[in-house]
Length: 266
Image 1: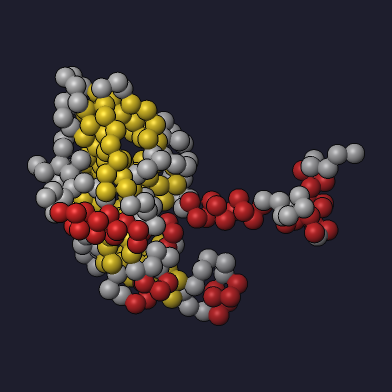
Image 2: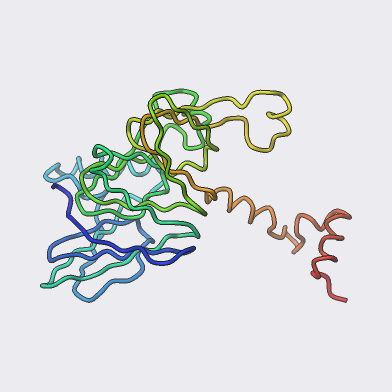
């Protein structure tokens, strides 16, 4: 194996974290901001990119790290190494309510494609890169543009998702239509494309967007019930406007709703 072989345990229900056990000289890489806690004896180091490539020279390292900018991530990642004798543990937390999904890359032919903000952490040696779409429709309307993240190697990786998650195995030619934001990731043989919803009423009044993501087997797909973008939009829609008034306070129904909810003091 080129990636370090790590043991892990996932804790919690709604706000999960993953605890990774490292043998001496083993390491794990993680996105900045996902660290939760670690035992004494583990060294933290900030590195360019994912640190999976060796002896590529300065320009190679800069190019590898620069690709991460295309996915909206930082140039740097954080690596944690066990530098003492005996097993040590380090933990990483999910950034919002949902689930942490362990991905054994050896079970997916050494490659797994996921949403660009889904990656949490992985064994040292796993490559965290970018996946370009060759299809114009997917690039323009797919919600993730032309770029998704790809995890490559033979080690364990961990991705996080919002709400409840589902794992579905698609047979050859089997098609699944999904909201573009609800995709967590899929194995490399799954074909990903965009399909127009169709119908004037659906397009104008449906409220579900005008495109589906279509996933066609064979392969494995992971779906989430609560994408972070959907959660953020719902929170923003209920947030007070400038001046301290919520969006519903400008209408009769909004005021009536506040009265029934007990939001008004007399």
